[in-house]
Image 1 (cartoon, rainbow, N blue to C red):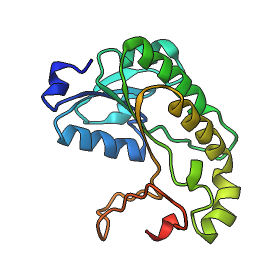
Image 2 (image 1 turned 90 degrees about the horizontal axis):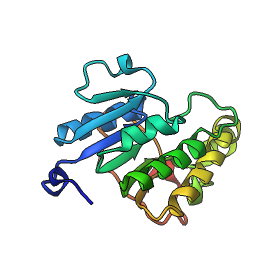
Image 3 (image 1 turned 135 degrees about the horizontal axis):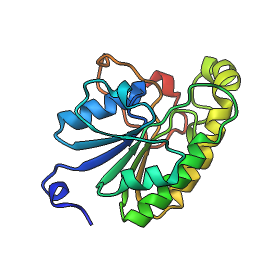
Length: 189
């Protein structure tokens, strides 16, 4: 059940991955829109001057995640991986998060994975699909595929966002939302 603030358009949101490059942008935007942001982070000092409620913890710690989810209207999952090795970070942290959300009765999840997960695999253009993906992101996206499957099966009100790339500057034109990637090269939209 949404809080009174959520019904008024202001939400309590938990951000996982708040200290990463994408996470900082998400937190700043949420704050700009007037939402109350909680960040579950391993190193709260990395949040700097961001006006958030910092909770020290790890996305793989079920107790910390449950405490952070409590009282939230929505969760924004923007965790990234700092390496190219095999990982289960995304699937394992998502399993923990989904359990906490169900226990705390938080229904709304927005998860950023990326172009290369799910049906966007093979739509990155020659350089990405033939060089970058196999050398650098193949293992990350294998786990993101598992993560997305868990989310789809969760019964939550979810949105998965697969951006083709991130920039800290304003894009040169309007953003394009693509819901059907058939015949689309994501780096050219």
